[in-house]
Image (cartoon, rainbow, N blue to C red):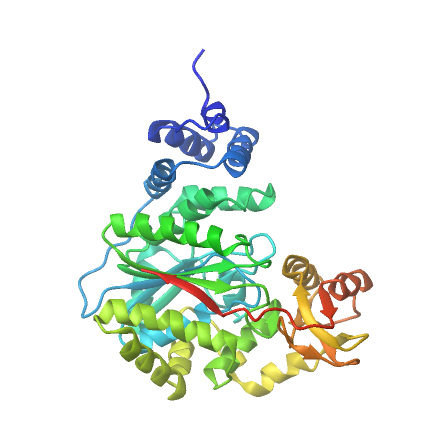
Length: 422
């Protein structure tokens, strides 16, 4: 009897590209069941895949749909990706920075996955914003304003779209080869030539250790460079939420506040990612590219570019009005305060992320998390503010309260960026 692909993975043997294609294509056309595909995903999560098998899986997923290609421009197309984190709205900042510097930008983004937020969900908070677009429609938006951010269409990597959804539903998200093949297949299909990958590490990331994150980053960069692309992978901290708001319209508002001049970790990481794209696309050194990115932010060019992008994709620009954003931040449902003084020694970002998702389902606008790991708090300081309509869910508040740990001694200081792989 011939050995199945799942048996091969379990015993550590390398499945062939043909075997991977039979399973993935079969799941797409219905000849392979959801249960069988879930067994495959669980086997990969438990036993891994070799580097070559991960490359083969990426190619199988890429070959399931179309690939974008564009007429030559002054600069190559750019794209970025985050492996997923809390309060991570960097795309809303990076895309307009890069586009305002004359570099075309096209990104296919996903929805919420596990405890992390999704860029598409955030963009749809701009009323009327079209994320479902055909390939020609997306190209037309890039031609018009320099950037477009779209959901995965039926034409582009349908295998990843199907498997991405199944992974979320079956708790098979945390796997290096599955993450790498998912990310890189979309990147290769996007038609871009330069990439910035934001690989999160820490207790709020899918990869908790720096070592795991570096392994994932190297695998993704290797696959991209083997395909003739330029790529940089930034290993960034996710032991604390990146921005000050998790989930809902207040998280989008936080990104717009950065474009209006707000400082902090969200701004710093966004500018750093944009700098790598500018450097690769224009052949500049990183210091000069960072100056260009900073100028786009401080001059307001990036803010105006995001307005153009939102309008070009059919979205309302009302959230760019600070008074409207303030209205959401005044809709306070509840606050959780510190019961003692101390240093914030741990944040359970996974529980926090799921609590934010559940709050959104109940009409929540988001959760403010003003303190980061290592911050000193005093008794009575507000650790969390829940925004929304109606009344606060007590079960959600109890979960939020349990996500922070206070200690008498300050924990070790963690960097925003641990390492960059090029």
